[in-house]
Length: 218
Ligand code: DX5
Ligand code: ZN
Image (cartoon, rainbow, N blue to C red; front, top):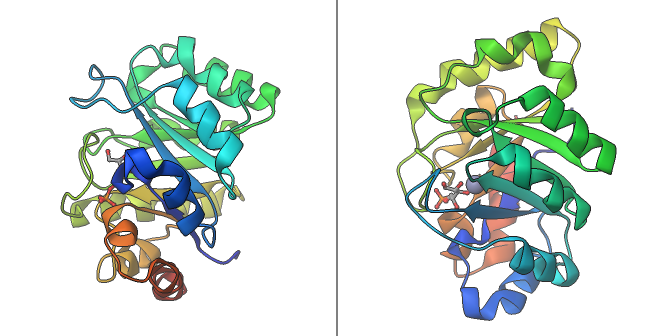
């Protein structure tokens, strides 16, 4: 398998020093960009205008995580501005497969995200439609929450299903990922790890990214 991917979440960055903080995570695989609309989740971050500037500034490719309602309408715009991957929530899309195909047609990788209460079985027959599946390990909306260990069975079941079907879909986890929890997510089959507070709260960010990568290597 590929080396584990570490995607720092800029939700924990300093929003008025975004360029500086993007440069601080130049050693990461992707920068995880959390778009929130105060409707799908009870928090608000930024929209396409800001993400376009992040795209122009970031030394690493963008992994956009849309926590917004009406994904069918808004998600393709993030692919058009050049994000490497665009992930929308299954709960927020009317026609997830049609939307996934549109995002791929624009040229981005496409991801589908599941809140903790959403089962994964409904995706089993459609793994080929997605490049990554995001298993949320917290209720989406805020950084700094505790890792939901009870999501590990969902993750292992997805890993088993992907293996059984010969799918190369990436399995991403987001929420409470840090030394001490990343090992469990890796053991359950995740290969792509989002970490906000664990990265930006570290005194040595490069060392923290390296540490997370090494702890996630099985
Ligand atoms: C939460 C966001 C996460 C958040 C994770 O809804 O999707 O990406 O930044 O933050 P930590 O790693 O602090 O749990
Ligand atoms: Zn996220």
